Length: 144
Image (cartoon, rainbow, N blue to C red; front, top):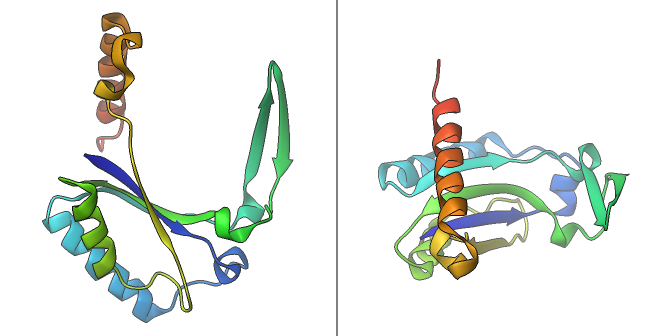
């Protein structure tokens, strides 16, 4: 199963405080373990929400709001995409993770939808389109 592992933002990360050299090294080592185990598919840190935008949809209308966004505890400061056997395995990996922030922090784990999750509404034509698009994305992401 694939999961998204989200490092929740804190007031420090939203203020743009960068991690220490020690934390960067510890996270680099953890990422190396994930890669060697075949778990990590992707992972990145995110800039504070002050550099972001939100687009709200209401029917045909679109409203763009500039950051920063309130409720820091609902924001994401970084993420990984992992391939694991189970949610329990993902939890065990997170338990091994260095604390991503200097003080208290929180990491959320959520499974990604897989093709099988969509049922009959995901017609053979839609499945073929999905497979074609995934192949195009994979091809485009290879170094040239």
